[in-house]
Length: 68
Image 1 (cartoon, rainbow, N blue to C red):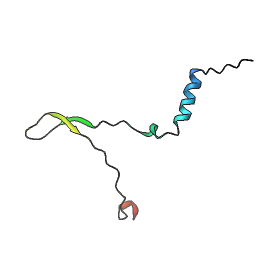
Image 2 (cartoon, one colour):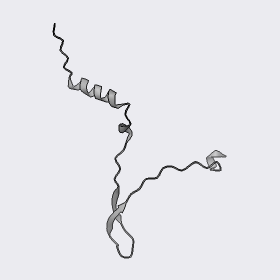
Image 3 (cartoon, one colour):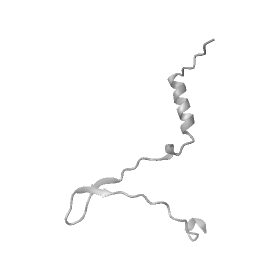
Image 4 (cartoon, rainbow, N blue to C red):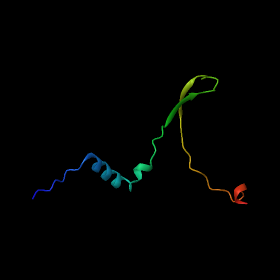
């Protein structure tokens, strides 16, 4: 008896999604490191490439309005 083990495309997609759900790679976002914006500097006065950085949220203050 021969069993057909070929999977359809839909089955393959479902299998990949099930395996990748546990991986952290799905939560990562591709963010550009540079951005072309207007520079107000006296020498520039034109659009130039600027470095873009992301910061983590700081610790919440206990004296903040919502915490009182």
